[in-house]
Image (cartoon, rainbow, N blue to C red; front, side):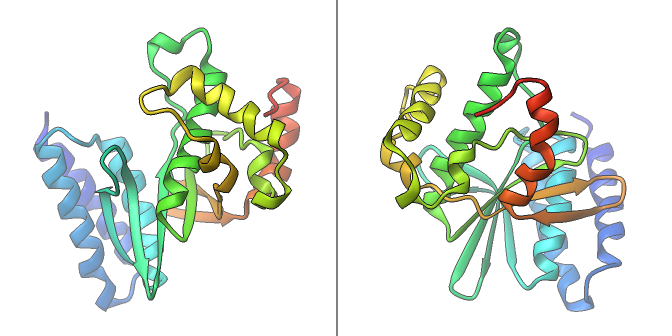
Length: 219
């Protein structure tokens, strides 16, 4: 653990991001930075993920949200970013594409199941749920989540559940959570530039579908 290096990196990024914030909002970003420093001291976060959280938090703060990171929202769930504004709240989960060594032989199914599980589990705890990813990666967004719940077919919901059940058993992903899950947007994170671009799910799928299809990835 290199606390000095971590602290230096998050201070540099915070200073960079603060240029695009109003003066009154800078303390809100500093608060997020301090949360991350304290969590790093407890070995709960790493620098790569923390930088991504800072960039997303800055975007939300600039739009009037109050932001917390690594917030516990249930007995089993801790979300990357929890933001409140008025009577609504937003959760953002950041996906870097990392998969553990034990899934070296089924990386795509595992990664997609993780995305499915996050949409199903986290979206029930907020009014808006979004995924975020570095601009260097692709997220295989299951097409079922582009449809409203009343347009989702039973067999398609079950297909998602069957894949999730391969990896999530304790507790499993519930059928109704998949049926009622909602995905508000996808954030593309430009780490070097220190900004995000928000896309609606259909727009993101339209942009990435051809690339994924060429690799015969379709869910």
